[in-house]
Image (cartoon, helix red, strand yellow):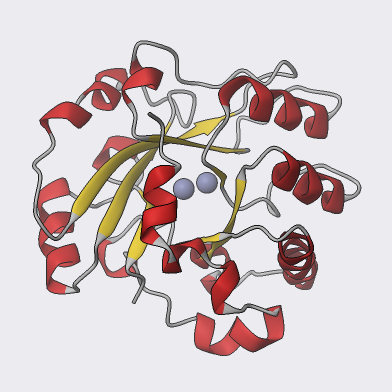
Length: 231
Ligand SMILES: [Zn+2]
Ligand SMILES: [Zn+2]
């Protein structure tokens, strides 16, 4: 079980089925220490519940469980703009960015992502090996390391029955580059259902093969992770 899981979708995403109160109870029952609500930005599947992102300040606080309010924003253009604006953006505890349909109409995805890194300084990039159109993903991983954006090992990608060999190859590349740059990656569930929250049992199968080692996993360093949240 992950102690920290910063990629959890709630009903606010429009296609996930987790309610905040049941998440809180589940995380407490499983002795998790930090959970991150990471609902999609506004351009996914016609979702328009922007005020959700302004509710962080009213979220309950607990002694042994920290609840963080984030967003999995979509990059929408080559300038690296995303589908969440201020004042909501500045109210988040952290920002993660990803590429999802509707596909950004950009000639150069890598350039769009780099511009987004520079403009928005996201804490992490979600599943940076699916839904991409980049000839050499190694360049993306190197740029993320240089701009101090944490790369994500996404557990829902690993549990997907349609997981492609090519995706595994790219995940291994990502881990190699993270190690070479002496950086850390984050492991998240990308839960859309309650039973997926924090569930890392799939790693038993992949841990050694992917070249994972404890010192490159930021989930093992909660203080360091908390320091990196948006001020
Ligand atoms: Zn995603
Ligand atoms: Zn997600």
